[in-house]
Image (cartoon, rainbow, N blue to C red; front, side, top):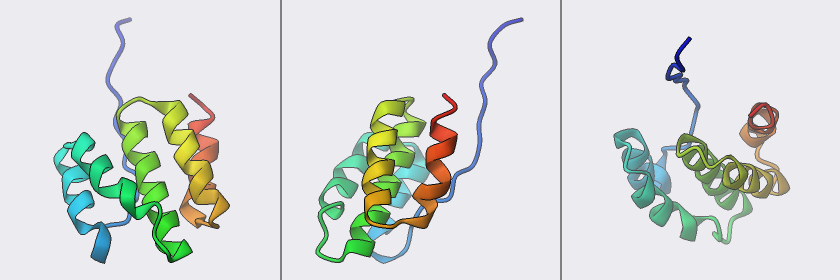
Length: 94
């Protein structure tokens, strides 16, 4: 049996400061999404930085870079992001 492509849907943040990166994520322009999200991961507000880190994890997962996705999921977890809590067990199945 030949390998088959699998797709699934993950929630990600697209409000306010995340809209430009979210647009690129939806369009499949993942390197640009990373470039926009990276500075947001160092936001002064912990909650905003956590959201950006979670979105980074989603982007890296979509790129097939699971170790990078796990790294950013853990960064988001360290900042108490609830979606990251749900994502990590799924990343560990790869």
